[in-house]
Amino acid sequence: MKYLIIVIMWTGYCALHSYLISIGFTNLMNRLLKKYNAFYRLFYILISLFLLIPLLNYTEQLDNKVIIFYGQYLDILRYILTAASLLMFFWAFFFDYDSLSFFGIRQILHFGKTKEIKSSNEIKKRGLLGIMRHPMYLALIIYLWCQTSKMADIVVNIVLTIYVIIGTILEEKKLVLEFGDAYINYQKEVPMLIPFTKVKK
Image (cartoon, rainbow, N blue to C red; front, side, top):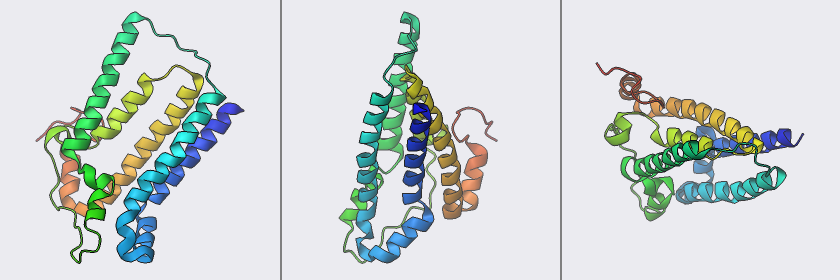
């Protein structure tokens, strides 16, 4: 029963997290908030963290019994994969993506200015983005499964892995709407999550 509660809570969090950044809801906020919509991205990040922290604590208290014990060699492999996933995540975050826009800082810096921030029509293909289209999501999945030691971890990781995959597919649809044929060609050239699974023509 407790694992069902964990599934329901994490699924609810993922659904809310996705809905708050969906095209329909963000367009609604844009109409309602108008120029103050510049602060919405920061609000979205803060509310996501605010809801995530108690959820993590509750999950930890609900089930803290360790059921997976790693040996010396598996621990070494786990630490290597954890370090690699963190390096991949932060490299992509700071060098391949616009971290200021992610946190909503760039939007706030442009608050009150008449000129709107427009996303570049150019698709970035340098660095990790030339190997896979969503390196941060792959890094997150690897990191999650390297921290698994309890049954609750397995349950949460399954929910979050499914959410990441579904979220990636939905994000792909938004990117196709934004970039059109250019992104469709990018999809044909570069794999979504697993690198080196497509042969470049």
